[in-house]
Length: 126
Length: 482
Image 1 (tube, one colour):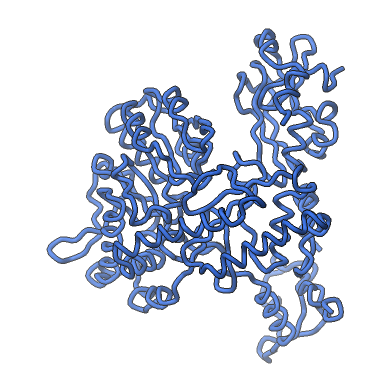
Image 2 (cartoon, chains in turn red, orange):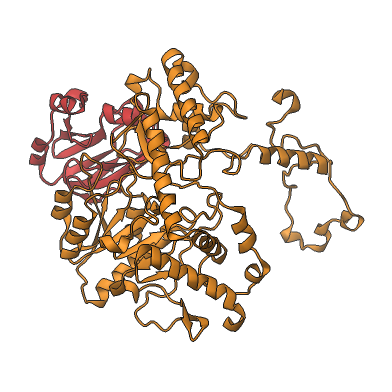
């Protein structure tokens, strides 16, 4: 099971955790704090193909709409339907039940290009 | 007191069964007697039942709650809320204009056509561009018109490979939306540490796939693109066109002509720079101008003058066609023409200079308490950034709500997106120094409150007809019934 420490992070604040060749994707705790109260998540479609760095999801808060970029390439195989009823899950459990979608990875080696927890923490430190 | 007077009740809450305004004898009979059974509803609609006097008081009170530019300072960044002279309203609704029928013969519309023609000519003169259409009904509509014109230009050259539009992250949010709507793929580029377009990033993104670069000038952080000439050169070298979002033209009017720095297509907002009223859902106007090599693709018809006669001319084979029924929002165009006629070239220049001076005055006065995100001279608006960690946990939205208690409309907040906790202030040239000082004093007081009593600011507003509203619940569970 994933937690903050064992996820890989993109500089754009998404995290990925590999379960076999499927990556679970969400946004970091820091990201949800910055975005503030989330009111809507525009999830991608299952079956949609995406590439590293491509915008594939939008998270809306009372402040703004933020684009979410795929941390790895592949096909969306599952989305977190629970967010339709309770988008605030992303605020409460960004590294747990507030995950966004799962990608069947086209190239699992892409995970190595992402940051580990400590390196990510260093990028957001003031 | 409000509770005793039941001031904040909705009309439906003030309703009393059977209470009515004026009733005429003829209307006593129910209309339902004349309607087929299938059209009748089973239960009566839940409508407020009020006397005429209750109704007058209810709506008069609501109208008194309105906040308007004619009442107070409106420093809404990116919106150019300048004073709208009353004379323009009088002139633009003269019956000769207001009662002209769009299908009337053009010989009977010479006055209106002449006014539109002169506005086209005036906009050409201040931008240096070869042609202007007045059709677009608003700024974003102008953008779409402009980008469709760009598309027609490339297609006329059999250049079908161009599928991308480059948009810097300091552009208006409508720019990427426009490019997307016109069928292009939007490519975003990040701005440099100075808040301007990063030339290297631009160069790396330009290719033979680029149809246009959409540049907001001055950009949304209130800065002039100082490398505009090089940008235009790079864009043209790649075979693309430079589109300028001229919504912020208030900072340039009379000072610089976009044609001189290489703009191919641009739009202006008459409801901003040219002092036509805007907001409240009223009509806008977003004229689009184009340089000579692109002009023939602009929407038709144009107003032309031949042998002293004005007419709508639609004989343009390569035009993208019509963008709006008839010819734009004529009453807004008339106000724009009034503005251009009122000021000579020297005064127009003073307008831009004063707009820039006022924004920098506010920025400089607030420095040390509320700082600009980019610590440099700005154009017509300044963008401040608040760090909640250094402000006892107070966010920009709290400061904005506290400003309401001091009688000011809140500036634009959380935009542009690249500035954290942004607050965007555009005073415009029509505000006096005394008004700017009052606004600065209010913000200074709020700064002091943040130091001594941050909870007061976090719970603001305290003096409005409603206190802090629960925006999160309102967005998550919108329930508009009562």
